[in-house]
Length: 116
Image (cartoon, rainbow, N blue to C red; front, top):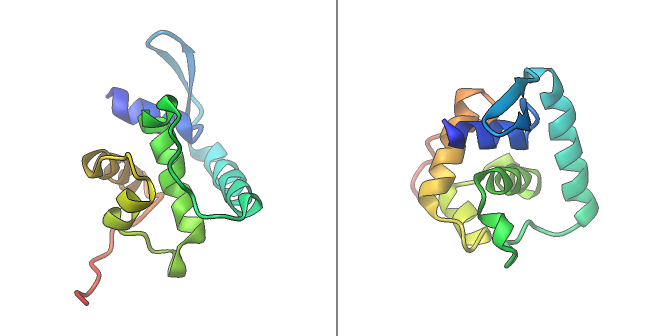
């Protein structure tokens, strides 16, 4: 549950009002949040890279960085392996957690890519 709330908070679906207290914002802010992330990614002008900031280990920060990868990805497709390589310190298991949460609320879609 904490993982889901951390991801939801990072994309403004919920807002933290206190310890273990959240307000539901709903999906209405989601489009604005995605556009803001896209703008930030394009403005930065470089692929998303992992930093050494200890805060970056949070699932919310990982969610934001994972979503930003889609804006710089060829054809808008990001594999979890590629994401793990880009976000050096991210454990692939945590990326699966993020991907599953984002898939559940239909922000991303899982695809079966042909083996190369």
